[in-house]
Length: 421
Image 1 (tube, rainbow, N blue to C red):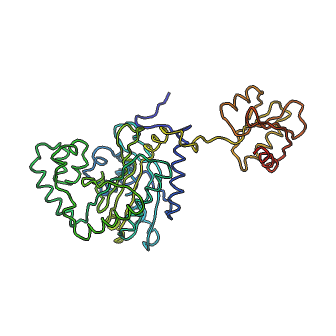
Image 2: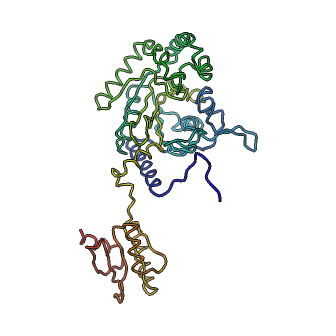
Image 3: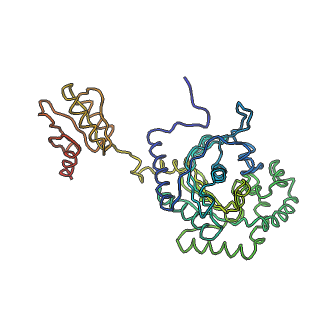
């Protein structure tokens, strides 16, 4: 007997319905914003992620599935999709690099991390990338789209946290001051944070252990190093969020877990009991410079990604609020003797042109048919009674409602169900 690997899972039944509900809701939402679907390979050159995500990040240090292929190329299963999407944008010269480009993705990612509630080694992410000139409007669009999506899938118990990491110039001034500050507490830092102190000091805020220490919480804040232009732009964004009723909290130490972020960053943090603890369900920000670094033109960009698996946990926990995931079939139909087989089969396949139909492919009896009706809970159950006339069928909705009618095709069926209503 073969078993799935640790941290992996099979998705079927109600979980599959929830996954499809999230996916369909996401693509309905992004379509309204004119985002186009993009699919990139799950296997990429490992250096793509090392360069984009950052060599001091947990993903690169601990979590990437990285190996040499038969051609001795160092490759990796994608741990996130932004780097792949921007690589595809540059390599394929999408839209000839002209105007604004809006891309949306949805698919499996891979990280070798400790499995826990709502977190797997093969997990699903959906997300968007807006490639457009940096502006308050494009920043707002990304956050508003994220908010609209969460509203569409009825996720309510969350807090939007937001911060501004500044431009490279203002952030570098801050980093120099921050490094001096943390040097005073170097002995209290973890070994990994000591490395980050030299390579990327901002990531200390993102450390799960050091981030909770008082001296880290009392560190200088980046806001005091931003230019007036950066502060005004950020305040304009906050005003737009207020105008559209999007509540937020400013988190001066929010840096996100990936090294490529700059300027605006944000996270939607769930407070749902389904996850047991506060957990980020959607996060993103601006990453100006990545396109140029990958060999493309000097275009700005902002995006977000959401954790599908965590949303699945929340939706499953609040299952009663989601009748959409029941996936009730329209028709259950079966034949009780061989003489009925052709009529039943012909009607079933005609109904399948428009309705979801469960056809029992083997002869059954009335007891088993009603047992299937109880299990599947179809809207309609169709069968032929003993000694019924040609094309004469019994249609049942429940124990109280049933009707004997002549059905030869889809048109007859639709006329009949109108009479039931």
